[in-house]
Image (cartoon, rainbow, N blue to C red; front, top):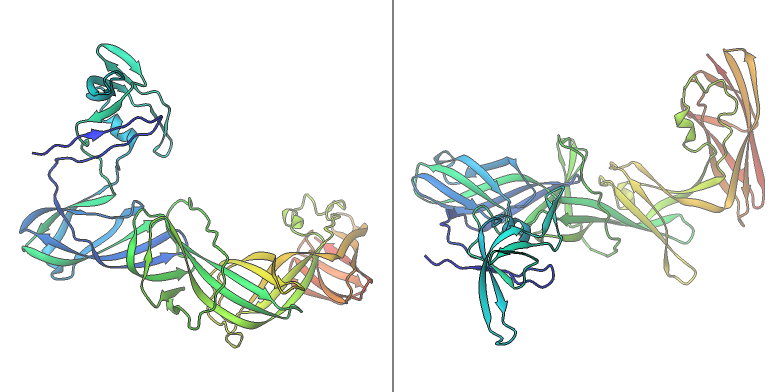
Length: 496
């Protein structure tokens, strides 16, 4: 039996080693002959792979290598494509205790090891035996380790801290492996080679969608490109893989402990769509029309959709209360206090709106993602002007992107009056809203107000037409000329 050694070279905290071991191995399954990935936008993927396996009649031990470290072992399904009834998995072990300096040394605490040292006078190496007392590594939460530099060994009856030389271990301890793998106990009713299919769920395979939009000079048209950003941190590489993406809110029972994906902004021109879109239950399925390689620790981008000359419009919105009213909404503790609701936000938001329709070159369900918007300056160079996040958007729905606040348009909101009409039952308050336009052109500003004190209200006086958007929102349209100030006043009565 050929037993090789494991050698450690000490260069500060670093260790270099070579590994081999003599433990007999079970039969190893063949490499993937085909693989398909269905990736969900929630850091989850379904992996389907085909492998060739040899079975003896009766009990077999089979190792399946190159398995993602993030596999959910409880989700695995195995079948023979030759004779499904002839092969049955009786036991399954997911082995992921990978070789690590700290784990390797922990296996040898209290055991005899060797230190190979250099005689400075003769320049010859020599070995001394010792007993390892402490590894010099500290374990932290999440099975993480850090090197403390305090290895301790007993050499020639004396305790040495950070012993010199390179540490040599006799073999790789049982239980440590080089890559994650599955080991099965399989009962087969027939001998020979079989083509098998394995499917399982794995985490740390995720995708997100990122969009790049370019506005024209007068903000009435835009070009839009959507990119799929695919990220693989599963611990394995998938070669020549089929790829499908699922967009939608798929329910999965688990703790929400997944990082958000931020894609890379890119632009390109592609003649034909690379993805075809179909329905899957109540979700959307996007299938890449070719195979692709997805390497471990790789971020890959593929164009999803593109459209040119899409009709768009720029919209200014002034919401004097912004979101502060939501914490007071229908709260009886605040509804009679006139000081609440006097706050004023001066910023006027800038939005760009367009419709996801076929005649604009779109008309496919757009997955949720970040939209980055650019516009050319007077030197024809693109400049970044803002970004926003969109949710899953069906075809023929309108998208509204908040890009920032207008520099030359200012709003103000003042409570002019608050009075009791019937004590404890009816109250009135009057507001004055001003929009000032310092631009060199007229603008239309949508002014939103929020009757937050109670659900029974009515507008008793106003100087501008208004529209009820919903129970807690009303809207005015302010048309403001160049260098003009526009006033909107209204009185609202609450009853309870």
